[in-house]
Image (cartoon, rainbow, N blue to C red; front, side, top):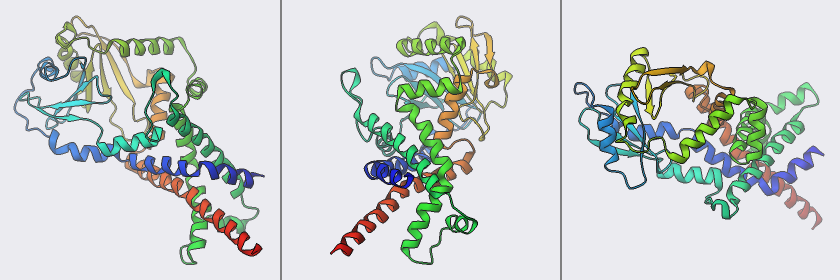
Length: 371
């Protein structure tokens, strides 16, 4: 039964799984490649003390189109790295500026190749039609991911060996006994070795496909406490109004005060982002939750630090969201986990292809025998 279920789920969804896994593998090293491309553009020569954050924000704001606002400034403890000024549009966009001269260096946006790869990975190149239409690309990817979960589970059930000798054979990938044996071993043994990582990536990826799944997933692992609801409500408010209504406002005047106060407390801070009401410090470890951070809340009038929310004291939902992103993208263990995730995703892309190969070969053999 499981063998037939495995086959008939893979036939209609296999090619989409190939696309999702292959594009996912390409996205694993997006940050590394982007940083390498941007490194020469954002390198600066330290020339005394940096200019005030407000002055830098004003310079960037003067170049922005109507409706686009400065949302925050990220500084690095590396004096030779330019400041990164976040802007509200497009998503994840920013502007690098020389903090010593005030010269704008370049814009930071997702590289065109990775922008296309992400659209293919998440939505099969579809565009969000808004409330008036159906986001078919997102739905198809979501349904295909559910199918992929079923394929992985049924595949591992079919894989289970009956004895020790069979177990030994199913753990080997042999390349010296012809292509058929190699493709078979790649499908059987490769699927087994990549099973845990592929299942983790699929289950976490579903949180971006279906709201009902996301709510259930986070309710199961994080719960719905009052603090979480307040935080969600606060996030929604920020999205509607923007983080900063105007960079000329009093809020930006105290960004430097708050930033200096936090940096003085944490001389080995690595990277800090100051925005309206908060200064966020990224934790430097390459192992664990990639989005782990400490948050300092400051008084918007005078910049004094009023409270601190360390990562270890963060609410469960914030931690869970960070872990979902970290596990899905393979960022939980530095370069080691990236390589594991990359090869697991490539194996995931190969599974439907090798499955199709043997299925078509079997069908062709049956027809040939009938003739």
